[in-house]
Image 1 (spheres, one colour):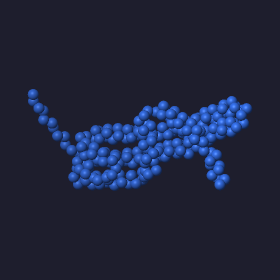
Image 2 (cartoon, rainbow, N blue to C red):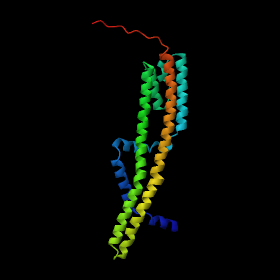
Image 3 (spheres, rainbow, N blue to C red):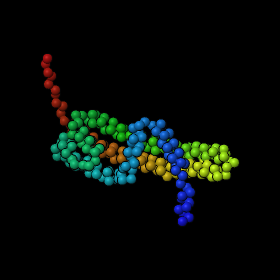
Image 4 (cartoon, rainbow, N blue to C red):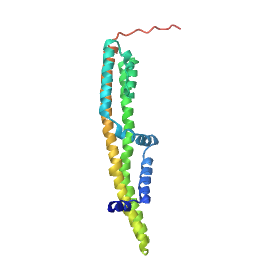
Length: 225
């Protein structure tokens, strides 16, 4: 079939290996190992992530915590069943919170840490998108050099020209059809996730203020030496 023949002509393992290996090596050299690990780990939830469903489940759990806090105290916040690990950690922190500033400090550090981890993954795929076209151009230059070096051999010109053209094609495809869409989707998912997490923490911080600030201070006994 003509279509299959055309696709077969566009398949060059050497050109593909040159672009992918070169792009990954350069990108890995520009970021730390942890950031690269998070970037590849983020591919798992990339398509199955549902931030709207997570937000709904999180706010439902927060409302349950609010009802418990109104009826009893925030000490029972960690008894709320939820599949969201973030909400579980926040509930445990709230239940054991000794003061509002302590809980607020933990909340701020938690969100900043998550923002930093998300940013490392996004930056890696952005670097891949930036590097891939350059690696394609390097392949093109190498192919042209090989072609000009063998101008007296007509049979060698074709493969060299194919390498020159296909590396540019692969670089463009890797950047614009793979890496850049991944980076942008991760960025959107991160923004949505951090937004509902900030909203949930604001509700929990309000509960901490209502109970801990209103509670009378308990004097500590001084132990005499």
